[in-house]
Length: 466
Image 1 (spheres, one colour):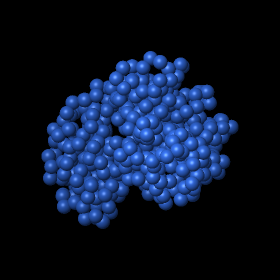
Image 2 (spheres, helix red, strand yellow):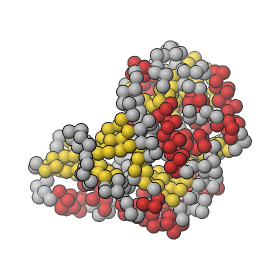
Image 3 (cartoon, helix red, strand yellow):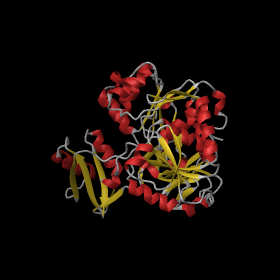
Image 4 (cartoon, helix red, strand yellow):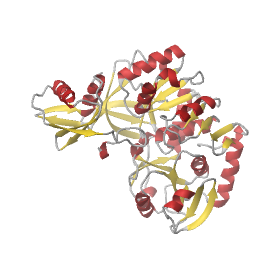
């Protein structure tokens, strides 16, 4: 199971931060053993997450000690955290000491302090009725404050972690950096793989837009960069040659479909540098990785999400739920594997329910497969609109506008097309191009000007808050 036996890595560096310096695997084991004396096995805790050492230590402890842990972004409104506590009735609350004091949050019993984090015992049952296969609760798609959580089992997360290590060929020599929120499933999977294999992670809360982030990346000889399309947009704006150094040998991308032109720019640059670029696709519901594209196919199958991860299967189903045999026919992408989550939870009662999915995940993504068995995304099932009887994909509209150098976000509100744009785009130019794309002369749509696009903690546009 995940993290069992990591003490064998001994004095090898596990975690590094400016606040704590170097922590070896022996240091982690020492702290985990202290927590074992304080927190009983099979208890349930809410962990307020930020990119620092203490929450990662508590997370490792929780997985090793067969506890159940719910990950919540520290940016979540305190009132929403209180609501989650009422609904889920955790045994413990774990969070930054200063945050707890500032918000005058807990009247519960102070239990223990670990670095800059404090642990509080709640009034709720120490051993609630929870399915013994469950180990982790994560909000869907990096959302904050949602009452709906993804239930992930020990088998789910272990299978996916070992699969990633295998296909990415991760070794104990690798060094990663926390350039995404710790509680985002993509970042968490990087932490899982690196700790599982005995590699190192530099833990920082610095933004990629800060010079210090890149100084730290270079000084600590980080070997891999992992990001969503938004992060690669930042790399291009900063200038790839300005941020690249010879220690970087692996780049991975997940979290949505990247603009093809940007992908070409990055691939051309990394080919010269002899560095690998791997496109992946996943969902929190798959713990989280689903597929990957081998680097040797990057140029041949540009835009593809590749093939399923080891020991798993993918296929396309039509609107009747029948498997599609024809290549290039668009339908819903369906995935089967041991990493598929147990189901959703909306309250404490849902935590004792059995596995609802039995390894099968209907992704909600539209896709097609080519004659060679490579899969391509074509949008979300929910992101369509009918205009004067014609059906349009909002994802396709956004993508085609992006190819013209125009960044927009589209939303369907009662069959009206709402187009959000930022102040560096020209309104008349947007109208002209949308009309050309949709081939509608009197298209009914509304333009809304924003200073910037609202984004989730994972860098994706937050469509709910547009």
